[in-house]
Each structure stands twice: as C-alpha cells, then as structure tokens.
Image 1 (cartoon, helix red, strand yellow):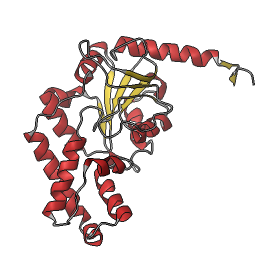
Image 2 (cartoon, helix red, strand yellow):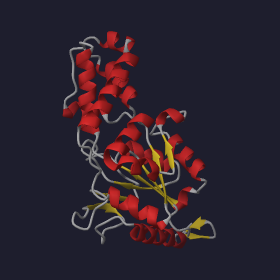
Image 3 (cartoon, one colour):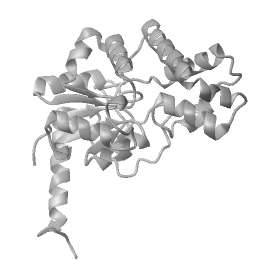
Image 4 (spheres, helix red, strand yellow):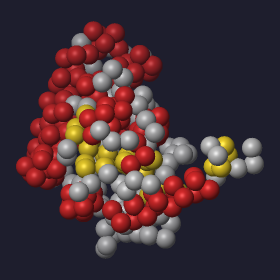
Length: 267
C-alpha cells in the first residue's frame, strides 16, 4: 500500500462553516433586486441538494416558482454577481474560523510532506478570500493544487473536479484522501475512486453518507476531540497524518483479504 500522499479538501462546510454567510449574501441580493422572497434556514437546508451558488438560485427559481421568478431568471447573472460580491464583503468583515482540526491537520501534512489540494464548486475568488481570512498569506501558499467548479465541465456530484485534482497532483486515487461535508461531495469523490472522510456541517447533518470511509463530527483537536459517527476511527479522537496512514493500511489489508486471485472470496 502506498502511504498517504495527498489530502484533498472541499471548501464550504469542510474548511469553514460558511453556509450562513452564503445564505445571508443570497438574501441581500434578493432584497437588492426587490424580489420579494428570502431563504430561511429550513429552506436553505432543502436547497443544499444542489451544488454551486448560481445553480442553487436557478434551481430554486425553477422548482419553487416564487413570485417574480421569471424576472429573477432573466437577471440571474446580475443577481449572482451581487451575491458573490456581498459574500466577499461579509467574509472580509466577519471573523471567519476554520473548523476544529483543520489548521492542525494542514500543518501536520506540510511537515510530513503530504500534498494539499482543494476540490470545490465555489469560485477561486471565494477560496482565496476564505484562506486569507483564516490563514492570511500562509493559507494561499499551503495548497499545491486548487481546482474550482468553473475549471471543469461538470460540478459535483460529477467527479470532474476530483479527477482534475488527481491529474494535476499526478497521483493515484488510492494514495489520496478526500475530506468533505456533504452527500454531494461524497458522491463526487467516491466516483473519482477516493476514500472520503465526512465531517457534516450545519446544513448537511442528517444527509446519507453511506459509503464514506469515515463520518466524524470534525477533524478534532487534542482538547476538542471528534465524535465518531460511522466508519473508521472509532478508537481515535483526532484525525492525524499517523492515524490516516494507519486507517488506510488497515483498509487495504481488509480489501486484500477479501480478494483472492482478483475475485471476491466465496465466488
């Protein structure tokens, strides 16, 4: 088995709890264009089945048909640009915080020589703004590869963004791990052949994470350990490079035992 060579992070909900900032920015855009509707937390949770900010607004307008939907669809590009600009301003004015364990794991990976990558549906400007807000210039230089939704043909749940990250890293999927917070992200990473650790976020808790390598409340820190929800890591309380290598080695051993001569045992 190859040791862990790269960690591939999603952004919104995985690196930081940014969903509320996005929801606030969307509502500001709706108000600015006098659209007469807004998204409350319950509705926003329902809309999280759609990946991408512009796509989410379009889905809402077409599926829920609120008053003024036709006008809004005609001005969708303007509305989304306003939303994106407002998001960046909100991120700059608010104290953005990384989720528990993220900064520690990023630092461990850099010391261990494990490459770091980002695979996200959000825009490059949003990624850069979040990294600057949370990690300053250090964050911009921490990641070896960043691939965003507008760099590939199809956004998540399609695997395109992960496949492009792997291509740029020049690494096989089996030597990398994906870190996600949503079922959409899990589907994308799994389709690219990646084992995936899920840390559910504010708006993705309760989604179906069947097939995840692990489901944990967070990446954990020594004084803020994660809660084990499913998969590997039941006896540990932080996601560390050492633990990840051990979990992957154990998983590879199990897979090898289940296969004899290229065929599943019992076939």
